Length: 140
Image (cartoon, rainbow, N blue to C red; front, side, top):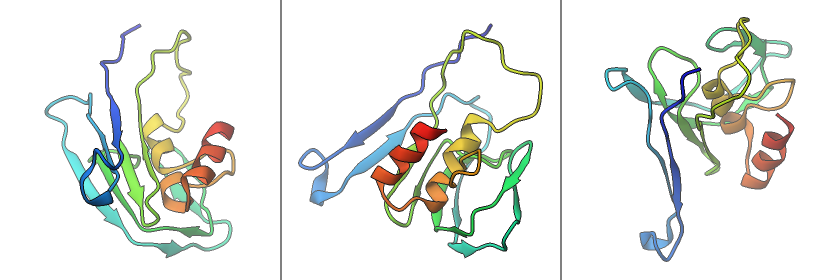
């Protein structure tokens, strides 16, 4: 089994960050020739029982999503990292599993940055506080 290269997240809080700001960042361990986009999606209301098309599968859409900025490989739906209009930030980290992945199509780790599964919420798109995001991430 191949070992994923390291990727790291960081957060700088005042007084280390200037002007009372919080700085959030992440390096990417993606292939160097893979196109990375920084994209913005406006807040939106969604029809009941609508679906959202993720990288490989479709799942239930939440009723409302917040405005988000994402950094992502151009070819997929998910993201390396993102932040919403409420300042909730989240990032993808590679892990090395002991068990091989299933051979079925599923959500990617980067889809989980933008999305939650099993009827939860869409993290960056629908969480309004870091406390709320922590609660839902532990349920995923």
